[in-house]
Image 1 (cartoon, rainbow, N blue to C red):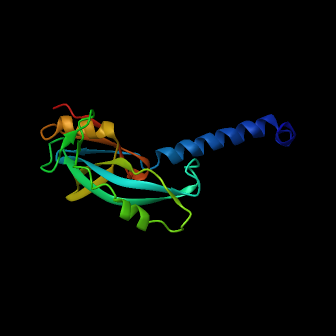
Image 2: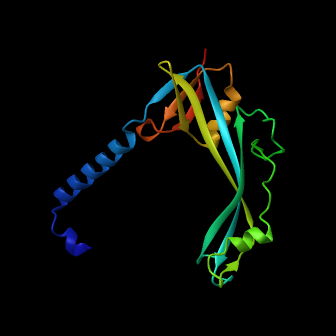
Image 3: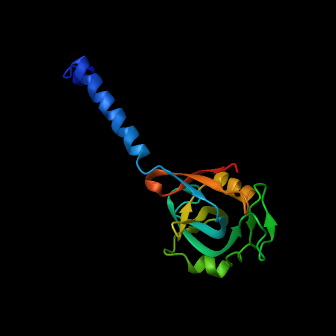
Length: 180
């Protein structure tokens, strides 16, 4: 490494470093703006999916292929209990009833090679958080995270919010109540 750094003088190395850092910061900040909204909604879509690993050797779980079976989803809106919800987790997110577990016949039918070993069915849980708001007369729907979802749920429906946008305004990174 020293051999390669010797090609650049300390002054050129410093300039190169500063330019690199500056470009990195500029790239991170491009499109990161804010948006104020009075009408908004937070959603958390929960999905439960059965998945099974098919392997050559059951002790080598990483070397196989996964097959997915039944799946169900449920959309939480603004923290309110959806009609089809059956339980709420410790984060306040509502979940649907478990999908039917794959039967032995379904597990065997999904084998692609006779020597594959069928793994134990696993129930995967996934949550996708989104924020929807009005901007210039159009509805914008962007991905977000749990903490923004909770902020929006707490503020809904009466408190105007300021949203801090992510890279290229492609996500919502923060929600802050606007004081009246």
